[in-house]
Length: 213
Image (cartoon, rainbow, N blue to C red; front, side):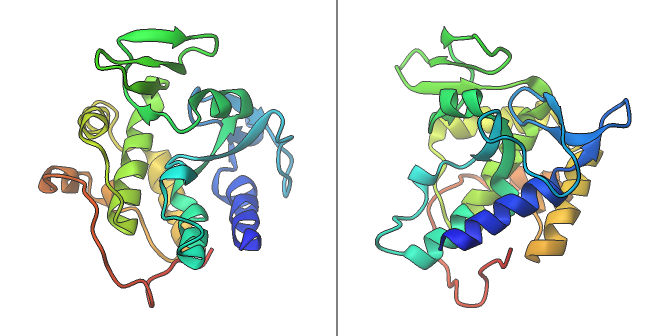
């Protein structure tokens, strides 16, 4: 259902991510480089410059053809929709998060892509947003029963500790809850990460628990 996603995207840009910079300008910060873009109220940015990033790639959600309703809810979950520079969104593609041993593209540093020593494609980002991303990925895994592959999970656990929850994440969590009705528990209780041995696939009933952005 494209209307669900387009509605969620509009809410993300106009309500969830809207905040002031140090100069008291209203706008949005992009996730991978923390670049500020001024944005008038009730508008979306030029999507050629800034677009909506699915922090958990759509290609790794449930199969759209097999479960179209569930896919629609997953791809529209506000917790993992974030503004990103369009060129950097494209640079990442669906690469997993990590710190490349071999950097292959650093034109948009601190957002870089490359590979680890085992040949896995990895994408890294500015340090002050790494914990934000980690907690989004942990949330998506627990909320939707999605697996985080081991080498990515190790990096995300490290990022979670190195970049603790900040006031903006708490505010964003509350804003999302006001629209979607649920919170990211790893922002409210960061210590929960250590209580989970492995973020793996699991099944659950969705009949009464689907979010409603």
